[in-house]
Image (cartoon, rainbow, N blue to C red; front, side):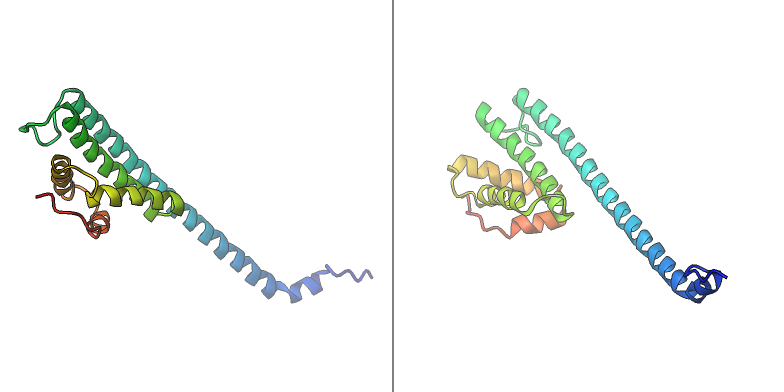
Length: 164
């Protein structure tokens, strides 16, 4: 009689162990699939946000090309100020998208910190002449009603100079 390590009798002794290993493998597989689904959902959310940002960018560019200040048709802005005004709208939409990417772990920390530094500089209004400062202030007040609440809180926590 051949006494192999893999005989039916010797394998049946380990059947409970094999079942436990099988269950652990199944649970690990389900956890992996769940994590993949979550990541796919996060990527889909970011892609939707990117598409919305592109649509708004096209809108701001069309307004600028027609010398119109978005949401502020009655103004005394010159051509550069119209561009500056519309660019600020575009900037905050792009920044919100960057924040979403960062918050979901889809943006590197160093890239986020460089983008956030730009946001802080613009929100602080330190380096702007009075008229540009007022444009920045007007745009931010309009954008606060349109952007993500967490992003607004992050930006509102940045000190800014009063333009008056």
